[in-house]
Amino acid sequence: MISSYSVWDATGDGVPALLGKQRPADVIPAGLLGLLVSTGVWSVRRVLWHVERLPVPEDRGDAVACLAPHLPAAHLGEVLAIAAAITEPPVRAMALAALVPHLPDEQRTIALRHATAAALTSRSSRISALTSLAPHLPEHQRDTVLRPDVTAILDASFGENRMFMLGDFAPHLPADLLAEVSAKACAFTDEDRRGKALVALAPHLPTAALISQAWAAAEAITGGSGRAKAMAALAPRVSAERRPSTLQQALAAAGAVIEPHARAETLAGLIAHLPDDQRAAVLEQALTAAAAITDHLYGNAVPVDAIAALAPHLPAGRRSAVLGRTLRAAGAIGRENWRMFELSRLAPHLPPELRTEALAMMAGIGREQWRAAGLAFIGPHLSAGQLTEAVAVADAIQDAYWQAHAIAGLAWHLPPAERTRAVAALTIVTPER
Image 1 (cartoon, rainbow, N blue to C red):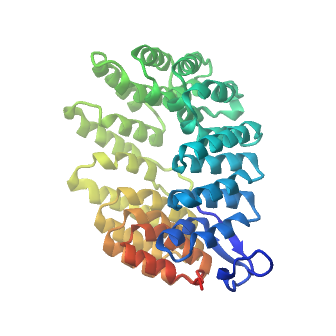
Image 2 (cartoon, helix red, strand yellow; image 1 turned 180 degrees about the horizontal axis):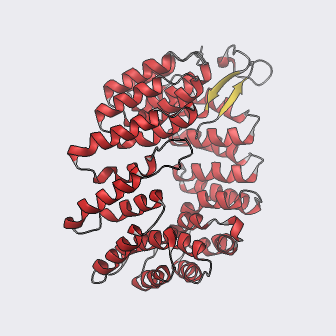
Image 3 (tube, rainbow, N blue to C red; image 1 turned 30 degrees about the vertical axis):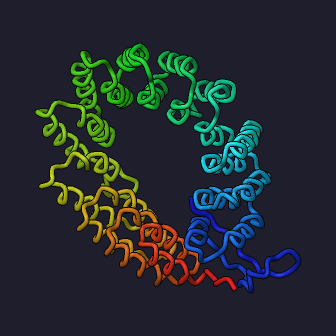
């Protein structure tokens, strides 16, 4: 997560002398903080001084989360104290949860205690806070801490359909609680809720009995994409002797889905599990569905979700053509923020020559905010030569904050010496003295 904060004029009592003079209203992306520490461009002391004084709790929480993996062990106690002092309970819980994997045992116990208390006292963001905390809870606490909120998700009114959150909790639930959750999901009379719950739970059901129960509940859905999606999620998980027939049932259900986007994505999820002699035909069926997507928000068909799901299954001879068409459709989106978002989502699936084209499209975005965000998103997917081009595009950004935002997304993928140079050269980074 990228956030920002003001770097105010560093004068007065208690301000470290090493800070020197700062320009009022300078801003630093939280994602840059770990780079400042790891490259040595700024000292840990300087970075922590800034984090401790951030006036907005959300910014302080983001900064702690970004810094946690990069701090030397000697400074973990300091950042733990900063996180524990955040006044907003859900922000405090999520910041502490980000710290937990990096702490020694004694500090981890303290962090978990503070984080659990903060998550449980949160009102507006309790479930989100507990989701971030769940992987770190000791086994003996999970039922007590997680049961009320999992129950709340299942009992939510139709207008608060949060079934997808079950997938975040499911890997961390005790076996008996997971079985209860699965049984309640299977018993939903609202078929939309049942289908969404089964899709969320499908990868995490641990026993053949629970999978069989869920499959029966999916089969009983009377129609629509919910039935097909639930069957497609569960079919690969049934017992080996039943799997061929369940896959064919799921395939028939997916092929009958009317809405092209849902049909393409559901078929895409099945391809890898089908017999070899069926895969090519199902791929064609899914590509035909993707080509029929016409009701997109952008005013023209840009089936990025569907094509991204199909990309791993495209034969080498067709990969560039199919992905190239989708890339150019995304590049033709009029609004720059939407264009940046779709290019970013497509980038991980592009072959090298199309990533060069995508980088050029990002570089051509006029508004520096969206150009910088796009560069940061595609950075992990660029080759060494493409990274050099992307850094040059980032360096040319005039706004100091957005220049730093772009470099924060690119620099981790550079060789160490180039990384340090890129960070030290930022307009926003004043050297220590």
